[in-house]
Structures are given as C-alpha cells and as structure tokens.
Image (cartoon, rainbow, N blue to C red):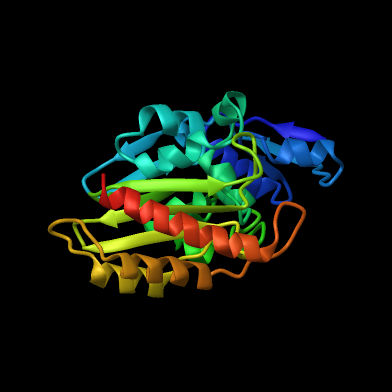
Length: 279
C-alpha cells in the first residue's frame, strides 16, 4: 500500500489528480476498520490529516461552514452554542477517542444511512463543497448522497467543506440503539424549530437507504405550531409523529426489525418536538 501525506489542500488535490484511484483518508474510523477486516483493499491512500485548511470552520450571519477534517470532538466542544443539534449528534458518536479522530467529512464520504451528523445537516439544507484540479462545485446533501455508502463525488475530487444555514430556535437530536453508548443507530432524528422562517425542520437517519427529509410532516406541523407562544396541539403532534414514521423505508437487519425502526421514528419525533417546544 502506498500512502501520500499532503501538507495542504492544493497538494491533496494534486495527488488525487495524479492518482484518481487513491482512497482519501480522514479520521480512519471507518476505512481503517474495513481494511483491517478485509472488506476493502486500497492500494493507494491520500492521508488528509496534515492539510490544515480542511480543519477550519467559519461562522457568518447566514451559515456555518465546517471543513472536512473538523472532528466530532471539535463540534461538541467548540460549536455547541452555534450548532447545538449537531453537537448533540456528535456526542453520541463512539468513544472520546473516536470523536477526536472521526470527521464530518468522513461521515459525509462514508454516506452510511446511519451517519450521525447527516440528519441535522439534511434538515438545514446543507451543501457539500467538492474540489478538484478542475475547480470546485457545490451539491445539496440530498443530491450528494446517492445511496447506501454511495455519493456523487468523482474519484479526482475531495470533500472540502459542508455548509449549513444558521437558524434561530431550539434544536434536538436523538438516537436509539441497543445500548447507550458506542453503538450504531437503529434510528436517529434531528429536529430544529426554525423560528425565523416559522418552519419545523427534520432529518431522519438509519431508516432508509439514504437520510430522509419528511417534507409533508414538516409542512403540516409547521402550520399547526403557534409560533408566538411556541405551542402545538397534541393531535397535531401525534399526526406529525405518524407522518415522520410513514416517510421512512427501513430494513430489518441484525440490529432491528423494520417495524421497530418505523415505530422508533414516531416516538423520537414526538419527544423531540415536545422538547423543543418546551425549551
């Protein structure tokens, strides 16, 4: 195995332009495990840890931009006030060692249906910026992830950053797993009360081939919320929970049945909305 260790984003892009068959390596919490288990056999690696530009984050009035090498640990400690729902999601990822190695770019690139940051990013209409020797382009997250562990990234491209809008209002992220820590989600959900635009925003994970945005559920419950008092009738909340569950297309596997995943989404949606309304 050949490993290239570029010291800048430009060097990393040049390395992929020269060897588009190379596998980018961020935190390694997925790739190294899969390689050790014999599930993947990369012949060439472009290791990104030294590319400092990818470790930066930027906050402006309209958006939060996270470089691809920003870790879960960075998010939970440095961005908890700016992105509380994303910080909640980051705290549920593995152990402290994993959170200090795993990156938001790795979560995007792996594109697991159970990726912990993906529901929050989807709910906020995040865009993924890709760079190559030919230039850069941005894709909505919903278009970037094309299937289970599949993305629209070309072999010569790197994920540079992800950009999500900043919104006012309470946020909550929750997941269900077979135990309380060190676990892959059976179902996960992020919910944001976007008080500026009077909209309930929701992203669902681990309940379909790709993360789910239950648009009809969002629209119906947004119309039922009293945005001045931040209240919502119980029957509207119940319909919202049912609509979120109906928007899923889960599978049965060794962690859960499809029926349980669908039920869990309804429970999470009900609890998350009530928690945000009472915040």
